[in-house]
Length: 98
Image (cartoon, rainbow, N blue to C red; front, top):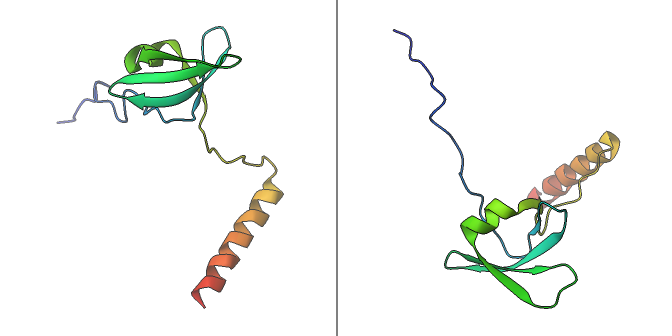
C-alpha cells in the first residue's frame, strides 16, 4: 500500500529567529533595524529615528519581512571570483594542516 503525502507535514521553522542587527522591511518599503529581542518582544529602530519601538515578536513578523541579516557575506555573482576565493580557502586549509 502506498503512503499518501498530504502535505500537512511541514518542515522547518514556522517563525524565523530574530537576531539583533537584522534589517527588516515593512509593507511600505521602510527599513527597521532590530535592537534587541527579549521575552517575546522585539525592540527596533526605524531608519531616521533616534528612539526604539517595541512590538510582540509575533506581530513584528506579521508586519515586517526580512531584508538582510546582520553579517551576511557579500557574495560575488562572478563565477571566476568565486572559484578563486574557494581555491584560496582550500590552499589555506592545506597549509594549516602541514
